[in-house]
Image 1 (cartoon, chains in turn purple, brown):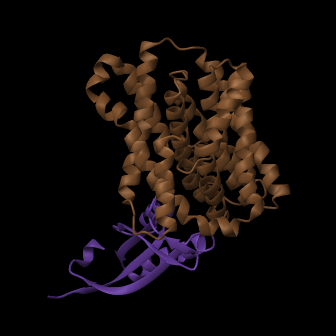
Image 2 (cartoon, chains in turn orange, purple):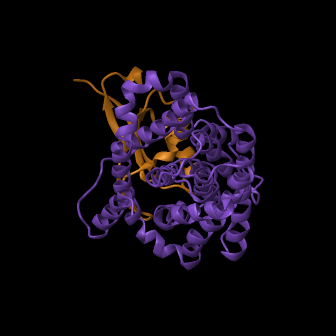
Image 3 (tube, rainbow over the protein chains, first blue to last red):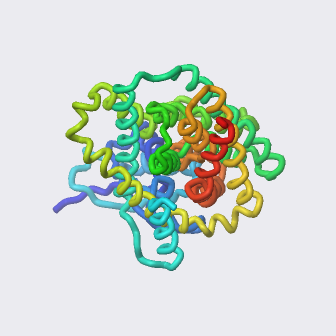
Length: 100
Length: 311
């Protein structure tokens, strides 16, 4: 089966950022997104997702490399300083390139 | 002591002893929704069957109180506690707002002792949630005028937060339906209320115990603040309640609201509006110190304040 190369942009952050992040990725050209509730830990301590202030999300966006870079850059400038945020980009192959 | 407090202690002990006990996050959220709706509906039904007092003037006075509390807390935190303005504003916002579960515990405390209170007290909970957060955020942002404030997002967050929607929605439903129409859902919303509150407090015990680490980092000043601020605010609340002629029960509940610190509405709103503030500090104080203090010693003290003023 033929696949077409795209980027998978993954943002892991505090749940408080879900609403602003959804608005950001739409504005910056993403055609869709997926949000998952997650838990984990890092330099700032553990986030057990037991209650509102302790919840974390993982947002995934499949898009072309220009949009991925634009979103990553925006997240870097806007949220890295004050929030618990991780961003990474990987290569993926999709079946319907026009959807992303 | 009320059994709800024992459930809190059980949760506390379980986490401190490293038990694997964990309540699913969705249960916490479901219980929050249930408690808010139940408190609202109960108030609404009683409002429908009893005429109410001078509600508007009383709510107005309570709003003044809600604005005053963060204005007192902020300079204490900023100058005595040496916090930067972001953290002082964030903590002041938590203490300016209210805790619904602390209110629920005070309600069951009064019911158990047959102390009557005004049926419309849940209206105060809904009214007092937002103003303190807004004042706290304003104080915290005074230092950085340059940054974009995102006020529309903050106002939507605090004025249409789930607690306000559910409390006011419940009040309206209870009031419109009245005691007869509400009877079929009474077993669910009224009779099971205390059981649900017990379960919620079990979860709160687990959450508070998980914050013990933050508490160590927070330092002695914040721990003292977490006990003394609610006593001061509780006294201001009791005086306000007495001045606007609430009953002893109503005065106790208003004092409890004044003394309580928010951990549902405030953390989410403050995280967006004051991103530079460290959420660990406000939560350590609000949830690690003030919440346990209020449900064990605080409520009886506020009841005592109310009795003293009404004597």
